[in-house]
Length: 143
Picture 1 (tube, rainbow, N blue to C red):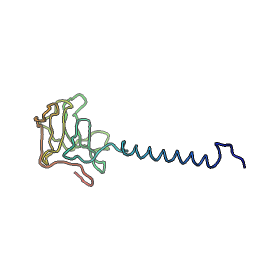
Picture 2 (picture 1 turned 120 degrees about the vertical axis):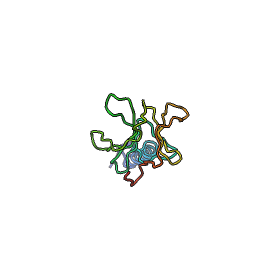
Picture 3 (picture 1 turned 180 degrees about the vertical axis):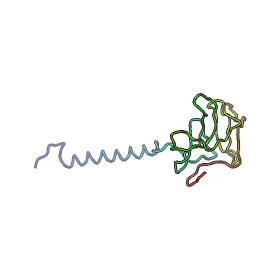
């Protein structure tokens, strides 16, 4: 059997192997730099949670993040709600009495406490809410 020069079994095999090796390398790089899931379920002392970011519990039942009550309100609160229910059902609110007036809130763990700052202040001196019983969504936790 005669094969054209570029269609020989060895040439096709070599080209296919080179493609597969390149694909595996690109896949590895993509998995390292672009994780499949961009939600996190744990916050650590060297991280913060800003308005627009959320923590989703490991079982994907609950979400911790910032929310506004109603469509016209610009007031922001930190709360926990059910993740997969279409209508946002808030089950816990942190800062009921000290709301954030815009999207500048920052939630951090500081000294073992969960602390909400008004992020509009560069020195984080404006503490809006704090607790010594932090709600940290970790693997296998049930809040």
